[in-house]
Amino acid sequence: MTKRETDTSASEASSDQSTETTATGETDAVPTDETEALFDALVEEGVLAVGERGVRTTDEFDDTHAVYHDSYVGVSDDEFHEAVSATFGLPDRASAADLVTDRGVTRDEFVVYLAVDSHLDREAATEELAAMAGMIWEVVPDSPVPADLADVTDDPQSLLASEERALISVWKRFCDPCDATKDDLDTLLGAVPDDVALAGVDGEAAVEFCQRHRVESAPGFVLADGDDRQTLCESDAETAAEEVRAFYEE
Image (cartoon, rainbow, N blue to C red; front, side):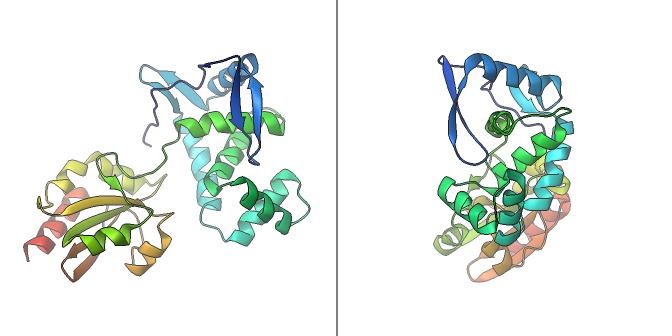
């Protein structure tokens, strides 16, 4: 799996206290000593690793994270609220729905909380788990879209409407075919003419876009040339490059 890295160490504190957002959306002040102890525990128990380029999540934790990600990110609101209710001891789904709305709890944040709880080889209080999840969340990429591409997850249709020729790629987290394509992204991008606008979307967030263009798996590519459209789902970069080149040369 792709290593996740950041130049900012979660162990560094800029004041006597650091602010952490709990899994239920509440913001608590966590003393620096406690924060450092929790960070050290995450390193000791194989959740975070510290290297020359900063802090990253370990492959072992990524595997745990992927299981919960696949289990919860795509579920219905009712299923999500049921899981939140069960996890935090709320009386019913309606209470969980109110909490999710009022405090902005996202599926991705909830998944990180569950993953760290599962991965740790010890009992931990909810507040500790929430603080740990906050540290982990800092080093998880905001989007699976490669850094070389503009992220238009919020409104991919606008790009298609404004550009005569465009290619919008679809990516997902914990997607081995996506990682394989990213490793050879230059091959794919080299097949795209210079006048084609390039961008990417998070396939798990841009659900309507994927449904509209029948992107059934990631990585996927929506090709546009005037009124012509083609959807390509292909993880082999060389094969995808041939298809892309043929589409734009027609």
